[in-house]
Image (cartoon, rainbow over all chains, first blue to last red):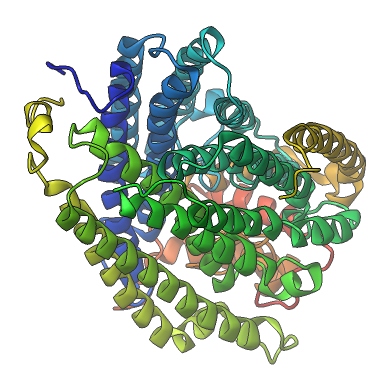
Length: 476
Length: 146
Protein backbone atom coordinates (compact mmCIF):
# COMPACT_ATOMS: atom_id res chain seq x y z
CA UNK A 1 0.00 0.00 0.00
CA UNK A 2 1.52 3.20 -1.08
CA UNK A 3 -1.33 5.63 -0.63
CA UNK A 4 -4.17 6.30 1.73
CA UNK A 5 -7.31 4.44 0.84
CA UNK A 6 -10.18 6.86 1.60
CA UNK A 7 -12.73 4.06 1.49
CA UNK A 8 -11.39 2.32 4.56
CA UNK A 9 -12.23 3.55 8.03
CA UNK A 10 -8.87 2.22 9.20
CA UNK A 11 -5.93 1.65 6.90
CA UNK A 12 -4.97 -1.58 8.66
CA UNK A 13 -8.19 -3.17 7.39
CA UNK A 14 -6.31 -3.49 4.11
CA UNK A 15 -4.63 -6.69 5.38
CA UNK A 16 -7.93 -8.42 4.67
CA UNK A 17 -7.37 -8.10 0.95
CA UNK A 18 -4.66 -10.75 0.42
CA UNK A 19 -6.72 -13.13 2.58
CA UNK A 20 -9.76 -12.66 0.35
CA UNK A 21 -7.76 -12.92 -2.86
CA UNK A 22 -6.01 -16.11 -1.77
CA UNK A 23 -9.30 -17.58 -0.53
CA UNK A 24 -10.78 -17.17 -4.00
CA UNK A 25 -7.72 -18.69 -5.67
CA UNK A 26 -8.07 -21.77 -3.46
CA UNK A 27 -11.80 -21.82 -4.25
CA UNK A 28 -10.95 -22.18 -7.93
CA UNK A 29 -8.68 -25.11 -7.07
CA UNK A 30 -11.42 -26.70 -5.00
CA UNK A 31 -13.90 -26.52 -7.88
CA UNK A 32 -11.37 -27.91 -10.41
CA UNK A 33 -10.71 -30.92 -8.20
CA UNK A 34 -14.45 -31.28 -7.69
CA UNK A 35 -14.81 -31.59 -11.46
CA UNK A 36 -12.05 -34.21 -11.59
CA UNK A 37 -13.93 -36.24 -8.99
CA UNK A 38 -17.22 -35.72 -10.77
CA UNK A 39 -15.64 -37.28 -13.85
CA UNK A 40 -14.08 -40.09 -11.81
CA UNK A 41 -17.57 -40.94 -10.60
CA UNK A 42 -18.38 -41.73 -14.22
CA UNK A 43 -15.07 -42.83 -15.77
CA UNK A 44 -13.72 -44.69 -12.77
CA UNK A 45 -10.08 -44.79 -13.84
CA UNK A 46 -9.84 -41.18 -15.07
CA UNK A 47 -6.37 -39.84 -14.16
CA UNK A 48 -5.56 -43.11 -12.38
CA UNK A 49 -2.98 -43.67 -10.95
CA UNK A 50 -1.74 -40.09 -11.31
CA UNK A 51 -4.49 -38.59 -9.14
CA UNK A 52 -6.47 -41.38 -7.44
CA UNK A 53 -9.91 -40.44 -6.15
CA UNK A 54 -8.81 -40.32 -2.52
CA UNK A 55 -6.17 -37.72 -3.36
CA UNK A 56 -8.56 -35.61 -5.41
CA UNK A 57 -11.11 -35.73 -2.60
CA UNK A 58 -8.55 -34.79 0.03
CA UNK A 59 -7.50 -31.80 -2.07
CA UNK A 60 -11.13 -30.85 -2.75
CA UNK A 61 -12.22 -30.91 0.90
CA UNK A 62 -9.01 -29.51 2.39
CA UNK A 63 -9.02 -26.61 -0.07
CA UNK A 64 -12.60 -25.90 0.99
CA UNK A 65 -11.68 -25.79 4.66
CA UNK A 66 -8.59 -23.69 4.10
CA UNK A 67 -10.24 -21.16 1.79
CA UNK A 68 -13.08 -20.70 4.24
CA UNK A 69 -10.53 -20.17 7.02
CA UNK A 70 -8.78 -17.56 4.87
CA UNK A 71 -12.17 -15.98 4.28
CA UNK A 72 -13.03 -15.93 7.99
CA UNK A 73 -9.65 -14.46 8.87
CA UNK A 74 -9.97 -11.81 6.17
CA UNK A 75 -13.45 -11.01 7.45
CA UNK A 76 -12.14 -10.70 11.01
CA UNK A 77 -9.29 -8.43 9.95
CA UNK A 78 -11.79 -6.25 8.13
CA UNK A 79 -14.65 -6.10 10.60
CA UNK A 80 -12.93 -6.21 13.99
CA UNK A 81 -10.98 -2.93 13.57
CA UNK A 82 -14.12 -1.24 12.24
CA UNK A 83 -16.24 -2.52 15.11
CA UNK A 84 -13.55 -1.86 17.71
CA UNK A 85 -13.12 1.62 16.24
CA UNK A 86 -9.34 1.46 16.12
CA UNK A 87 -6.50 0.21 13.94
CA UNK A 88 -5.62 -3.48 13.99
CA UNK A 89 -3.15 -4.32 16.76
CA UNK A 90 -0.45 -5.45 14.32
CA UNK A 91 -0.96 -5.33 10.55
CA UNK A 92 2.57 -6.67 10.15
CA UNK A 93 1.76 -9.84 12.13
CA UNK A 94 -1.35 -10.31 9.98
CA UNK A 95 0.74 -10.20 6.81
CA UNK A 96 3.42 -12.52 8.20
CA UNK A 97 0.76 -15.03 9.26
CA UNK A 98 -0.81 -14.75 5.83
CA UNK A 99 2.39 -15.91 4.17
CA UNK A 100 3.01 -18.64 6.77
CA UNK A 101 -0.50 -20.02 6.37
CA UNK A 102 -0.45 -19.72 2.58
CA UNK A 103 2.94 -21.47 2.35
CA UNK A 104 1.85 -24.25 4.73
CA UNK A 105 -1.34 -24.72 2.76
CA UNK A 106 0.36 -24.87 -0.62
CA UNK A 107 3.06 -27.25 0.65
CA UNK A 108 0.45 -29.56 2.15
CA UNK A 109 -1.57 -29.68 -1.06
CA UNK A 110 1.62 -30.32 -3.06
CA UNK A 111 2.46 -33.09 -0.60
CA UNK A 112 -0.93 -34.70 -1.27
CA UNK A 113 -0.44 -34.49 -5.02
CA UNK A 114 3.23 -35.41 -5.41
CA UNK A 115 3.85 -38.10 -2.79
CA UNK A 116 1.84 -41.23 -1.99
CA UNK A 117 -0.09 -40.57 1.22
CA UNK A 118 1.72 -43.30 3.17
CA UNK A 119 5.06 -41.75 2.20
CA UNK A 120 3.82 -38.33 3.29
CA UNK A 121 2.81 -39.84 6.64
CA UNK A 122 6.26 -41.32 7.02
CA UNK A 123 8.14 -38.19 5.88
CA UNK A 124 6.27 -36.02 8.36
CA UNK A 125 6.73 -38.43 11.27
CA UNK A 126 3.08 -39.35 11.69
CA UNK A 127 4.02 -42.26 13.97
CA UNK A 128 5.27 -39.78 16.59
CA UNK A 129 1.79 -38.33 17.00
CA UNK A 130 -0.60 -40.11 14.64
CA UNK A 131 -3.31 -37.68 13.53
CA UNK A 132 -3.47 -38.34 9.78
CA UNK A 133 -5.77 -40.44 7.64
CA UNK A 134 -9.04 -39.29 9.15
CA UNK A 135 -11.62 -37.58 6.96
CA UNK A 136 -11.01 -33.81 6.61
CA UNK A 137 -8.14 -34.07 9.12
CA UNK A 138 -5.75 -35.62 6.60
CA UNK A 139 -3.14 -32.86 7.05
CA UNK A 140 0.27 -34.00 8.30
CA UNK A 141 0.63 -33.45 12.04
CA UNK A 142 3.18 -30.73 11.39
CA UNK A 143 0.65 -28.82 9.27
CA UNK A 144 -1.88 -29.16 12.06
CA UNK A 145 0.63 -27.69 14.51
CA UNK A 146 1.22 -24.86 12.03
CA UNK A 147 -2.52 -24.21 11.84
CA UNK A 148 -2.63 -23.92 15.63
CA UNK A 149 0.29 -21.46 15.67
CA UNK A 150 -1.27 -19.33 12.93
CA UNK A 151 -4.58 -19.40 14.79
CA UNK A 152 -2.91 -18.32 18.04
CA UNK A 153 -1.15 -15.40 16.36
CA UNK A 154 -4.36 -14.45 14.61
CA UNK A 155 -6.46 -14.62 17.79
CA UNK A 156 -3.85 -12.58 19.65
CA UNK A 157 -3.92 -9.93 16.94
CA UNK A 158 -7.67 -9.51 16.65
CA UNK A 159 -8.14 -10.14 20.39
CA UNK A 160 -5.80 -7.27 21.32
CA UNK A 161 -7.61 -5.03 18.87
CA UNK A 162 -10.91 -5.92 20.46
CA UNK A 163 -9.66 -5.53 24.03
CA UNK A 164 -8.20 -2.10 23.38
CA UNK A 165 -11.22 -0.87 21.45
CA UNK A 166 -14.98 -0.66 21.49
CA UNK A 167 -16.62 -3.98 22.28
CA UNK A 168 -19.70 -4.54 20.19
CA UNK A 169 -21.93 -7.58 20.12
CA UNK A 170 -20.86 -8.33 16.55
CA UNK A 171 -17.15 -8.34 17.28
CA UNK A 172 -17.61 -10.28 20.52
CA UNK A 173 -19.65 -12.97 18.78
CA UNK A 174 -17.12 -13.10 15.93
CA UNK A 175 -14.32 -13.48 18.46
CA UNK A 176 -16.20 -16.17 20.39
CA UNK A 177 -16.72 -18.11 17.19
CA UNK A 178 -13.07 -17.83 16.20
CA UNK A 179 -11.83 -18.89 19.64
CA UNK A 180 -14.25 -21.81 19.55
CA UNK A 181 -12.92 -22.74 16.13
CA UNK A 182 -9.37 -22.87 17.47
CA UNK A 183 -10.30 -24.70 20.68
CA UNK A 184 -12.31 -27.44 18.98
CA UNK A 185 -9.57 -27.93 16.39
CA UNK A 186 -7.40 -29.21 19.24
CA UNK A 187 -9.44 -32.43 19.16
CA UNK A 188 -7.73 -33.09 15.82
CA UNK A 189 -4.67 -34.08 17.87
CA UNK A 190 -6.62 -36.69 19.83
CA UNK A 191 -6.65 -39.96 17.94
CA UNK A 192 -7.56 -42.79 20.30
CA UNK A 193 -6.85 -46.40 19.36
CA UNK A 194 -10.51 -47.31 19.77
CA UNK A 195 -12.23 -46.45 16.47
CA UNK A 196 -15.58 -45.65 18.10
CA UNK A 197 -13.95 -43.22 20.50
CA UNK A 198 -11.86 -41.78 17.65
CA UNK A 199 -15.01 -41.10 15.64
CA UNK A 200 -16.85 -39.69 18.66
CA UNK A 201 -14.27 -37.00 19.35
CA UNK A 202 -13.57 -36.41 15.65
CA UNK A 203 -17.06 -34.92 15.55
CA UNK A 204 -15.99 -32.41 18.22
CA UNK A 205 -13.95 -30.82 15.46
CA UNK A 206 -16.22 -31.38 12.50
CA UNK A 207 -19.73 -30.94 13.88
CA UNK A 208 -18.96 -28.39 16.57
CA UNK A 209 -17.30 -26.38 13.82
CA UNK A 210 -19.88 -26.38 11.07
CA UNK A 211 -23.03 -26.77 13.15
CA UNK A 212 -21.67 -24.87 16.15
CA UNK A 213 -19.08 -22.13 16.33
CA UNK A 214 -18.97 -21.47 12.58
CA UNK A 215 -22.60 -20.38 12.84
CA UNK A 216 -21.44 -17.69 15.28
CA UNK A 217 -18.89 -16.52 12.72
CA UNK A 218 -21.51 -16.60 9.98
CA UNK A 219 -24.01 -14.73 12.13
CA UNK A 220 -21.50 -12.03 13.02
CA UNK A 221 -20.40 -11.56 9.40
CA UNK A 222 -24.02 -11.40 8.25
CA UNK A 223 -24.95 -8.90 10.97
CA UNK A 224 -21.97 -6.71 10.07
CA UNK A 225 -22.81 -6.60 6.37
CA UNK A 226 -26.52 -6.04 7.06
CA UNK A 227 -25.82 -3.04 9.29
CA UNK A 228 -23.67 -1.59 6.54
CA UNK A 229 -25.92 -2.17 3.57
CA UNK A 230 -29.28 -1.47 5.24
CA UNK A 231 -28.47 1.18 7.82
CA UNK A 232 -30.86 -0.53 10.24
CA UNK A 233 -30.36 0.32 13.89
CA UNK A 234 -27.58 -1.65 15.55
CA UNK A 235 -29.77 -2.50 18.57
CA UNK A 236 -32.22 -4.35 16.34
CA UNK A 237 -29.51 -6.21 14.45
CA UNK A 238 -27.72 -7.27 17.61
CA UNK A 239 -30.90 -8.60 19.19
CA UNK A 240 -31.45 -10.75 16.11
CA UNK A 241 -27.86 -11.93 16.24
CA UNK A 242 -28.26 -13.11 19.83
CA UNK A 243 -31.47 -14.94 19.00
CA UNK A 244 -29.83 -16.67 16.03
CA UNK A 245 -26.73 -17.81 17.85
CA UNK A 246 -28.75 -18.86 20.89
CA UNK A 247 -30.81 -21.13 18.63
CA UNK A 248 -27.66 -22.34 16.89
CA UNK A 249 -25.91 -23.48 20.04
CA UNK A 250 -28.98 -24.72 21.93
CA UNK A 251 -29.88 -27.03 19.05
CA UNK A 252 -26.44 -27.59 17.59
CA UNK A 253 -24.37 -28.74 20.56
CA UNK A 254 -26.59 -31.69 21.45
CA UNK A 255 -27.49 -31.99 17.78
CA UNK A 256 -24.02 -33.49 17.41
CA UNK A 257 -25.85 -36.63 18.48
CA UNK A 258 -27.16 -37.23 14.95
CA UNK A 259 -23.63 -38.38 14.13
CA UNK A 260 -23.57 -40.83 17.03
CA UNK A 261 -26.34 -43.16 15.84
CA UNK A 262 -24.24 -45.85 14.19
CA UNK A 263 -20.63 -45.48 15.31
CA UNK A 264 -20.72 -47.48 18.51
CA UNK A 265 -22.19 -44.83 20.83
CA UNK A 266 -25.14 -45.80 23.07
CA UNK A 267 -28.84 -45.84 22.10
CA UNK A 268 -29.69 -42.68 24.02
CA UNK A 269 -28.25 -40.73 21.13
CA UNK A 270 -30.90 -42.10 18.76
CA UNK A 271 -33.51 -40.05 20.64
CA UNK A 272 -31.46 -37.12 21.79
CA UNK A 273 -29.69 -36.70 18.46
CA UNK A 274 -32.92 -36.94 16.47
CA UNK A 275 -34.83 -34.43 18.57
CA UNK A 276 -32.15 -31.77 18.85
CA UNK A 277 -30.92 -32.01 15.30
CA UNK A 278 -34.50 -31.79 14.06
CA UNK A 279 -34.45 -28.31 15.59
CA UNK A 280 -31.18 -27.34 13.91
CA UNK A 281 -32.97 -25.71 10.92
CA UNK A 282 -34.35 -23.05 13.31
CA UNK A 283 -31.28 -20.78 13.45
CA UNK A 284 -31.02 -20.94 9.66
CA UNK A 285 -34.69 -20.07 9.30
CA UNK A 286 -34.17 -17.16 11.68
CA UNK A 287 -31.30 -15.99 9.48
CA UNK A 288 -33.61 -15.93 6.45
CA UNK A 289 -36.17 -13.83 8.35
CA UNK A 290 -33.34 -11.65 9.62
CA UNK A 291 -31.82 -10.85 6.24
CA UNK A 292 -35.18 -10.34 4.48
CA UNK A 293 -36.52 -8.19 7.32
CA UNK A 294 -33.46 -6.00 7.54
CA UNK A 295 -33.25 -5.47 3.80
CA UNK A 296 -36.98 -4.60 3.69
CA UNK A 297 -36.61 -2.16 6.56
CA UNK A 298 -33.50 -0.57 5.09
CA UNK A 299 -32.96 3.07 5.88
CA UNK A 300 -30.69 3.73 2.95
CA UNK A 301 -30.29 2.66 -0.63
CA UNK A 302 -26.79 1.18 -0.63
CA UNK A 303 -25.22 1.29 -4.09
CA UNK A 304 -23.76 -2.21 -3.61
CA UNK A 305 -26.82 -4.23 -4.67
CA UNK A 306 -24.69 -7.33 -5.15
CA UNK A 307 -23.74 -7.43 -1.47
CA UNK A 308 -27.42 -7.40 -0.43
CA UNK A 309 -28.16 -10.20 -2.87
CA UNK A 310 -25.34 -12.29 -1.43
CA UNK A 311 -26.56 -11.60 2.11
CA UNK A 312 -30.08 -12.78 1.38
CA UNK A 313 -28.79 -15.57 -0.85
CA UNK A 314 -26.54 -17.05 1.80
CA UNK A 315 -29.34 -17.26 4.36
CA UNK A 316 -31.86 -18.79 1.97
CA UNK A 317 -29.39 -21.29 0.50
CA UNK A 318 -28.07 -22.21 3.95
CA UNK A 319 -31.63 -22.74 5.16
CA UNK A 320 -32.31 -25.19 2.34
CA UNK A 321 -28.88 -26.83 2.33
CA UNK A 322 -28.19 -27.09 6.03
CA UNK A 323 -31.74 -26.86 7.33
CA UNK A 324 -34.12 -28.64 4.98
CA UNK A 325 -31.64 -31.07 3.42
CA UNK A 326 -30.22 -31.80 6.85
CA UNK A 327 -33.61 -32.42 8.41
CA UNK A 328 -34.57 -34.73 5.56
CA UNK A 329 -32.25 -37.49 6.82
CA UNK A 330 -31.53 -36.55 10.41
CA UNK A 331 -34.18 -38.61 12.22
CA UNK A 332 -32.65 -41.92 13.29
CA UNK A 333 -35.22 -44.19 11.60
CA UNK A 334 -34.59 -42.39 8.29
CA UNK A 335 -30.86 -42.05 8.79
CA UNK A 336 -30.63 -45.80 9.37
CA UNK A 337 -31.19 -46.16 5.61
CA UNK A 338 -29.61 -42.96 4.30
CA UNK A 339 -26.43 -42.76 6.43
CA UNK A 340 -23.36 -42.47 4.22
CA UNK A 341 -25.29 -42.46 0.94
CA UNK A 342 -25.36 -39.94 -1.90
CA UNK A 343 -27.97 -38.08 0.14
CA UNK A 344 -25.24 -37.20 2.61
CA UNK A 345 -23.18 -35.81 -0.25
CA UNK A 346 -26.17 -33.80 -1.52
CA UNK A 347 -26.70 -32.21 1.89
CA UNK A 348 -22.99 -31.52 2.37
CA UNK A 349 -22.68 -29.65 -0.91
CA UNK A 350 -25.62 -27.27 -0.53
CA UNK A 351 -24.98 -26.71 3.18
CA UNK A 352 -21.32 -25.77 2.80
CA UNK A 353 -21.94 -23.65 -0.26
CA UNK A 354 -24.99 -21.90 1.17
CA UNK A 355 -23.77 -21.25 4.66
CA UNK A 356 -20.04 -20.82 4.42
CA UNK A 357 -18.90 -20.27 0.84
CA UNK A 358 -21.68 -17.73 0.35
CA UNK A 359 -21.16 -15.86 3.64
CA UNK A 360 -17.50 -15.41 2.73
CA UNK A 361 -18.52 -14.14 -0.72
CA UNK A 362 -21.07 -11.85 0.98
CA UNK A 363 -18.26 -10.33 3.00
CA UNK A 364 -16.00 -10.12 -0.03
CA UNK A 365 -18.76 -8.49 -2.05
CA UNK A 366 -19.20 -5.82 0.59
CA UNK A 367 -15.55 -5.24 1.55
CA UNK A 368 -13.63 -5.80 -1.65
CA UNK A 369 -14.70 -2.62 -3.50
CA UNK A 370 -13.48 -0.61 -0.53
CA UNK A 371 -10.30 -2.64 -0.13
CA UNK A 372 -9.57 -2.12 -3.80
CA UNK A 373 -10.17 1.59 -3.54
CA UNK A 374 -13.15 1.53 -5.88
CA UNK A 375 -15.54 3.04 -3.37
CA UNK A 376 -18.72 1.81 -1.71
CA UNK A 377 -19.59 -0.37 -4.64
CA UNK A 378 -18.24 -1.56 -7.96
CA UNK A 379 -19.77 0.03 -11.04
CA UNK A 380 -23.08 -1.22 -12.37
CA UNK A 381 -21.48 -3.40 -15.02
CA UNK A 382 -19.19 -5.16 -12.55
CA UNK A 383 -22.13 -5.72 -10.23
CA UNK A 384 -24.16 -7.16 -13.07
CA UNK A 385 -21.42 -9.68 -13.80
CA UNK A 386 -21.08 -10.49 -10.11
CA UNK A 387 -24.82 -11.11 -9.83
CA UNK A 388 -24.64 -13.36 -12.89
CA UNK A 389 -21.92 -15.30 -11.10
CA UNK A 390 -24.11 -15.48 -8.01
CA UNK A 391 -27.04 -16.98 -9.88
CA UNK A 392 -24.99 -19.34 -12.04
CA UNK A 393 -23.12 -20.77 -9.06
CA UNK A 394 -26.17 -20.96 -6.83
CA UNK A 395 -28.48 -22.53 -9.38
CA UNK A 396 -25.75 -24.98 -10.39
CA UNK A 397 -25.22 -25.99 -6.78
CA UNK A 398 -28.95 -26.48 -6.31
CA UNK A 399 -28.91 -28.67 -9.43
CA UNK A 400 -25.94 -30.68 -8.11
CA UNK A 401 -27.86 -31.16 -4.88
CA UNK A 402 -31.04 -32.28 -6.63
CA UNK A 403 -29.18 -34.79 -8.84
CA UNK A 404 -27.28 -36.22 -5.87
CA UNK A 405 -30.54 -36.41 -3.93
CA UNK A 406 -32.14 -38.41 -6.73
CA UNK A 407 -29.06 -40.65 -6.84
CA UNK A 408 -29.24 -41.08 -3.07
CA UNK A 409 -32.91 -42.03 -3.05
CA UNK A 410 -32.35 -44.69 -5.70
CA UNK A 411 -29.24 -45.92 -3.92
CA UNK A 412 -31.20 -46.35 -0.69
CA UNK A 413 -33.97 -48.09 -2.61
CA UNK A 414 -31.65 -50.58 -4.32
CA UNK A 415 -28.89 -51.10 -1.80
CA UNK A 416 -30.18 -50.34 1.68
CA UNK A 417 -33.87 -51.21 1.97
CA UNK A 418 -33.94 -54.78 0.53
CA UNK A 419 -32.91 -57.66 2.80
CA UNK A 420 -29.73 -59.70 2.44
CA UNK A 421 -29.70 -61.52 -0.85
CA UNK A 422 -32.13 -59.10 -2.50
CA UNK A 423 -30.07 -55.95 -1.91
CA UNK A 424 -27.85 -54.77 -4.73
CA UNK A 425 -24.13 -54.44 -4.10
CA UNK A 426 -22.52 -51.02 -3.79
CA UNK A 427 -20.70 -51.26 -7.11
CA UNK A 428 -23.74 -52.50 -9.03
CA UNK A 429 -25.88 -49.78 -7.48
CA UNK A 430 -23.32 -47.24 -8.65
CA UNK A 431 -23.84 -48.34 -12.25
CA UNK A 432 -27.56 -47.64 -11.90
CA UNK A 433 -26.88 -44.06 -10.83
CA UNK A 434 -24.76 -43.10 -13.84
CA UNK A 435 -27.29 -40.76 -15.44
CA UNK A 436 -27.41 -38.67 -12.27
CA UNK A 437 -23.64 -38.55 -12.05
CA UNK A 438 -23.54 -37.26 -15.63
CA UNK A 439 -26.09 -34.58 -14.84
CA UNK A 440 -24.19 -33.66 -11.69
CA UNK A 441 -21.00 -33.26 -13.71
CA UNK A 442 -22.74 -30.98 -16.22
CA UNK A 443 -24.09 -28.89 -13.34
CA UNK A 444 -20.53 -28.78 -12.00
CA UNK A 445 -19.28 -27.36 -15.29
CA UNK A 446 -21.93 -24.63 -15.05
CA UNK A 447 -20.76 -23.95 -11.51
CA UNK A 448 -17.25 -23.38 -12.86
CA UNK A 449 -18.63 -21.02 -15.51
CA UNK A 450 -20.41 -19.16 -12.73
CA UNK A 451 -17.22 -18.95 -10.74
CA UNK A 452 -15.28 -17.59 -13.73
CA UNK A 453 -18.05 -15.06 -14.27
CA UNK A 454 -17.84 -14.06 -10.60
CA UNK A 455 -14.07 -13.64 -10.84
CA UNK A 456 -14.51 -11.51 -14.00
CA UNK A 457 -16.52 -9.07 -11.94
CA UNK A 458 -13.26 -8.06 -10.26
CA UNK A 459 -11.86 -6.82 -13.56
CA UNK A 460 -13.18 -3.31 -13.12
CA UNK A 461 -10.21 -0.98 -12.91
CA UNK A 462 -10.34 2.70 -12.09
CA UNK A 463 -13.72 3.32 -13.70
CA UNK A 464 -14.85 5.19 -10.62
CA UNK A 465 -15.95 8.70 -9.86
CA UNK A 466 -13.40 11.46 -10.23
CA UNK A 467 -12.41 11.89 -6.57
CA UNK A 468 -11.72 8.18 -6.28
CA UNK A 469 -9.44 7.77 -9.24
CA UNK A 470 -6.25 8.60 -7.36
CA UNK A 471 -6.62 5.69 -5.01
CA UNK A 472 -8.22 3.26 -7.40
CA UNK A 473 -4.90 2.06 -8.69
CA UNK A 474 -2.94 2.53 -5.50
CA UNK A 475 -4.25 -0.32 -3.39
CA UNK A 476 -1.69 -3.11 -3.03
CA UNK B 1 -39.40 -8.56 17.16
CA UNK B 2 -41.51 -6.78 19.76
CA UNK B 3 -40.10 -4.23 22.14
CA UNK B 4 -40.88 -6.33 25.20
CA UNK B 5 -38.29 -8.85 24.08
CA UNK B 6 -35.07 -6.97 24.70
CA UNK B 7 -31.51 -7.51 23.57
CA UNK B 8 -30.59 -8.33 27.17
CA UNK B 9 -33.11 -11.15 27.25
CA UNK B 10 -31.80 -12.53 23.98
CA UNK B 11 -28.25 -12.39 25.31
CA UNK B 12 -29.23 -14.22 28.50
CA UNK B 13 -30.91 -16.99 26.53
CA UNK B 14 -27.75 -17.31 24.43
CA UNK B 15 -25.38 -17.53 27.38
CA UNK B 16 -27.65 -19.57 29.65
CA UNK B 17 -28.82 -21.89 26.91
CA UNK B 18 -25.47 -22.66 25.41
CA UNK B 19 -23.76 -23.22 28.75
CA UNK B 20 -26.60 -25.43 29.98
CA UNK B 21 -26.70 -27.56 26.86
CA UNK B 22 -22.94 -27.79 26.70
CA UNK B 23 -22.97 -29.24 30.22
CA UNK B 24 -25.69 -31.69 29.19
CA UNK B 25 -23.49 -32.63 26.24
CA UNK B 26 -20.57 -33.30 28.56
CA UNK B 27 -22.83 -35.44 30.75
CA UNK B 28 -23.93 -37.49 27.75
CA UNK B 29 -20.29 -37.81 26.72
CA UNK B 30 -19.49 -39.22 30.15
CA UNK B 31 -22.30 -41.71 29.75
CA UNK B 32 -21.03 -42.63 26.28
CA UNK B 33 -17.55 -43.24 27.64
CA UNK B 34 -19.02 -45.66 30.18
CA UNK B 35 -20.58 -47.74 27.43
CA UNK B 36 -17.60 -47.87 25.04
CA UNK B 37 -15.72 -50.77 26.67
CA UNK B 38 -18.66 -53.11 26.30
CA UNK B 39 -20.09 -51.82 23.01
CA UNK B 40 -16.71 -51.96 21.27
CA UNK B 41 -15.38 -55.16 22.89
CA UNK B 42 -12.43 -53.15 24.14
CA UNK B 43 -10.89 -56.29 25.63
CA UNK B 44 -10.43 -57.63 22.09
CA UNK B 45 -8.71 -54.47 20.92
CA UNK B 46 -5.34 -56.15 20.41
CA UNK B 47 -2.06 -54.65 19.28
CA UNK B 48 -2.72 -56.05 15.82
CA UNK B 49 -5.98 -54.08 15.70
CA UNK B 50 -4.15 -50.91 16.72
CA UNK B 51 -1.50 -51.49 14.02
CA UNK B 52 -4.27 -52.22 11.53
CA UNK B 53 -5.89 -48.87 12.32
CA UNK B 54 -2.55 -47.22 11.53
CA UNK B 55 -2.39 -49.01 8.18
CA UNK B 56 -5.95 -47.84 7.53
CA UNK B 57 -5.03 -44.23 8.36
CA UNK B 58 -1.60 -44.09 6.73
CA UNK B 59 -3.07 -45.09 3.38
CA UNK B 60 -6.03 -42.73 3.56
CA UNK B 61 -8.53 -45.53 2.96
CA UNK B 62 -11.31 -43.18 4.14
CA UNK B 63 -10.64 -41.09 1.01
CA UNK B 64 -12.64 -43.59 -1.08
CA UNK B 65 -14.36 -45.97 1.36
CA UNK B 66 -16.72 -45.37 4.22
CA UNK B 67 -16.25 -46.98 7.63
CA UNK B 68 -19.42 -47.22 9.74
CA UNK B 69 -20.95 -44.97 7.11
CA UNK B 70 -18.43 -42.14 7.42
CA UNK B 71 -15.90 -41.24 4.79
CA UNK B 72 -16.14 -41.05 1.03
CA UNK B 73 -18.89 -42.74 -0.97
CA UNK B 74 -16.72 -43.75 -3.92
CA UNK B 75 -16.04 -47.31 -2.79
CA UNK B 76 -17.88 -49.88 -0.64
CA UNK B 77 -18.56 -49.59 3.08
CA UNK B 78 -15.95 -51.57 5.04
CA UNK B 79 -17.39 -51.56 8.56
CA UNK B 80 -19.09 -54.87 7.76
CA UNK B 81 -16.77 -56.17 5.02
CA UNK B 82 -15.73 -58.95 7.39
CA UNK B 83 -19.26 -60.37 7.22
CA UNK B 84 -19.67 -59.65 3.51
CA UNK B 85 -16.48 -61.47 2.59
CA UNK B 86 -16.57 -64.79 4.33
CA UNK B 87 -16.07 -64.07 8.06
CA UNK B 88 -13.56 -66.18 10.00
CA UNK B 89 -13.33 -68.89 7.38
CA UNK B 90 -12.47 -66.80 4.35
CA UNK B 91 -12.00 -63.11 5.16
CA UNK B 92 -8.23 -63.06 5.69
CA UNK B 93 -7.29 -64.96 2.53
CA UNK B 94 -9.83 -62.87 0.61
CA UNK B 95 -8.34 -59.59 1.80
CA UNK B 96 -4.77 -60.71 1.10
CA UNK B 97 -5.65 -61.77 -2.44
CA UNK B 98 -7.70 -58.62 -3.01
CA UNK B 99 -4.94 -56.24 -1.91
CA UNK B 100 -2.43 -58.09 -4.07
CA UNK B 101 -4.63 -57.93 -7.16
CA UNK B 102 -5.00 -54.12 -7.17
CA UNK B 103 -5.37 -52.28 -9.42
CA UNK B 104 -7.68 -54.62 -11.31
CA UNK B 105 -7.13 -52.65 -14.50
CA UNK B 106 -10.66 -52.94 -15.86
CA UNK B 107 -11.01 -49.99 -18.26
CA UNK B 108 -13.47 -47.39 -16.98
CA UNK B 109 -13.97 -49.14 -13.64
CA UNK B 110 -13.18 -47.35 -10.39
CA UNK B 111 -9.61 -48.28 -9.63
CA UNK B 112 -7.99 -48.98 -6.27
CA UNK B 113 -4.27 -48.21 -6.03
CA UNK B 114 -1.65 -50.85 -5.20
CA UNK B 115 -0.52 -49.99 -1.67
CA UNK B 116 2.36 -52.50 -1.50
CA UNK B 117 1.44 -53.62 1.99
CA UNK B 118 3.50 -56.31 3.69
CA UNK B 119 1.84 -59.57 4.72
CA UNK B 120 1.97 -58.39 8.29
CA UNK B 121 0.26 -55.12 7.40
CA UNK B 122 -2.53 -56.88 5.50
CA UNK B 123 -3.05 -59.20 8.45
CA UNK B 124 -3.20 -56.25 10.86
CA UNK B 125 -5.67 -54.49 8.58
CA UNK B 126 -7.82 -57.63 8.55
CA UNK B 127 -7.75 -57.74 12.35
CA UNK B 128 -8.78 -54.08 12.49
CA UNK B 129 -11.69 -54.61 10.09
CA UNK B 130 -12.77 -57.73 11.96
CA UNK B 131 -12.75 -55.92 15.31
CA UNK B 132 -14.60 -52.97 13.74
CA UNK B 133 -17.32 -55.26 12.38
CA UNK B 134 -18.13 -56.35 15.94
CA UNK B 135 -18.73 -52.85 17.32
CA UNK B 136 -22.34 -52.49 18.51
CA UNK B 137 -23.61 -50.01 15.89
CA UNK B 138 -27.30 -50.25 16.76
CA UNK B 139 -27.58 -52.75 13.90
CA UNK B 140 -26.27 -50.51 11.15
CA UNK B 141 -25.91 -51.15 8.22
CA UNK B 142 -29.36 -52.54 7.39
CA UNK B 143 -27.95 -55.39 5.29
CA UNK B 144 -24.70 -57.02 4.23
CA UNK B 145 -24.17 -54.74 1.26
CA UNK B 146 -23.38 -51.83 3.60
